[in-house]
Image (cartoon, rainbow, N blue to C red; front, side, top):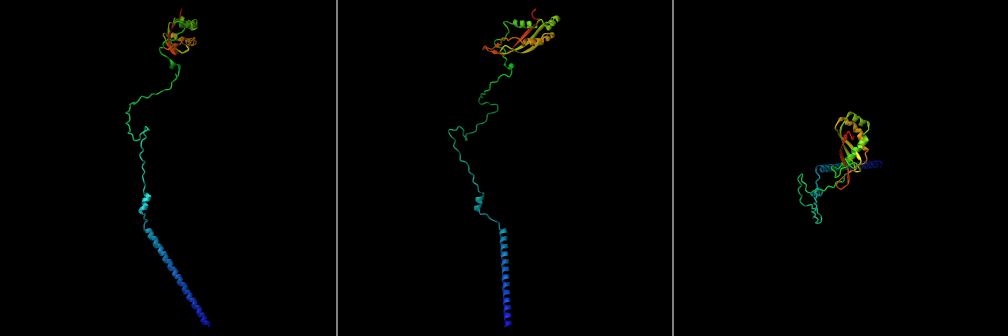
Length: 224
């Protein structure tokens, strides 16, 4: 009895081991087949290129150029975009005169206001001799004048006076000394003429006072 029980248990163990081994081999075979199928699928996908359907290509790469519609010119607008282009003027050609309005410019200095050849020249006193009498009264009796009398210097000194609209002498230019000895009178005459009383200014055709220049000779010796 005991032997029979031992052999039955041993037989059952052997059968269970065989069944367990068969299930393991079946699972290994299935795993190997699944791996081979996956490798074949991957290799086939890598070899076959992906194709794009013609409809998809049109949708991706097609573009539509939309042109603007021509605009009719406005009859009330002088600009016409479709008007022919006029030829350019040749160089040096002036089509129409251009009026340029320059701002009034004021004279930069008193010399810019000088009127040449006025209608009435500037004068001092009542006649021409009043100027010589004034110079004689100021220079006669000075040491310089006595020196010129001693050496017997004679001649003329030409001066140019700039007289403003108020009759004031504003500038003195010594143009010529007929003898070199008379140049000693340059400085005294400069002071005498600058301090002179006002002259009667020059006037234009409308009777308005203007700036002018006047050239006069001074005779040496003066009145004796």
